[in-house]
Length: 438
Picture 1 (tube, rainbow, N blue to C red):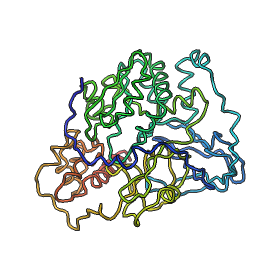
Picture 2: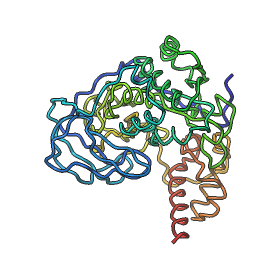
Picture 3: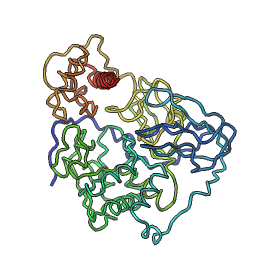
Picture 4: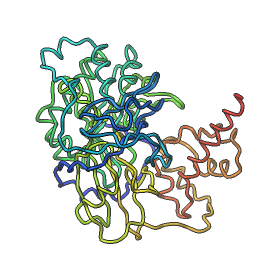
């Protein structure tokens, strides 16, 4: 049975723009910019230098601790190792590659037969996943091998996330329609590592073609949970509640209630790493929006600049806003030279009709933000404490539990920039904690 999540909204889905567009292989650009920061954790240290020739799948950087390596998506010559703009809004170290369009692969890429994979231990599988740079591709970018290793002996429920509840985005929908066997194969590897014989797939009922494709290849022990569409049901904690009825405690991780959630694209990347030996060097990106002339789902090399993607789809007017991600949780970009990274599932291009800026936004105490918050928070009080700079009150109001889904800002009749305020508030809390430590 499906459990009801708390709060949430029903925004216009706008998936019709790209949902019927099959995945197209995007032509490799002449120049690619590969950031050393594409995951939660320590930035990679470059292991190549200007003038080096690199091959497809060759490691470009790595580090110790909470980190996964990054690899070259093309063969070519390193033109620079320098800071470049990043989708986070900061400058990060990047390896700039001039593509020779030869597609020569690294000799380290070695496919494995099913028999060879069956003989691998969970530890060996996790080592392969780490070596191939697999991270959570739904946007969190947490290193997948760490999530797997931390779940050993603690997790009794695996959930593959195909909810994709945010407007416009159809990347996982198309992935499951076109590559259901590989996606389910990756899920099977996760089940083997965690020692479980059952798993769930959470998918919303607005994806009938993906549901049919997955049902056709559904292996024994895997249950397809079809959920009524609701935002932000695809968020990790909300999906756990919708499928199991369990609620992750404040400040806790899914493993605290015996669950582990893996995005569909992550499962496909796990399959590619284990069977094909191919590192995570390309991903499906939905390029869509209300002013886009040809919305598309594109298989894009990591390091492709947003400018190239906008040129590929065309726009009817100058964009008002270009987001890395969807319109609810995406990050607006100030520079379209930023590259696609592992966690970028969409580039959303919006016209001026989406401009809802209020010059002087004042809360009218209507309480609608409280009604829709899926985390049982009080956004109205959180925003007030952020405005006054009271870090202790922000902590007491559990601001760090905010998942920044944007539901509160979506329903706010006064146009208060709530999510922007909460991001600033979280930084104030971290700054206060660092100051206290010093």
